Image (cartoon, rainbow, N blue to C red; front, side, top):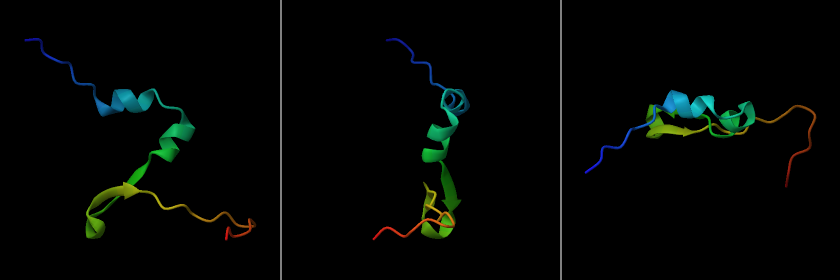
Length: 50
């Protein structure tokens, strides 16, 4: 039986581009049950989608 090498999360994160890191970013919110995706913040001057 062979042993599998686990990859550190920091090593995997280093391979991502900045756009990919931003897309997969999470925040810790204990009241909602842990790590959740970041909510999209509105950009000033853009119309609301409807």
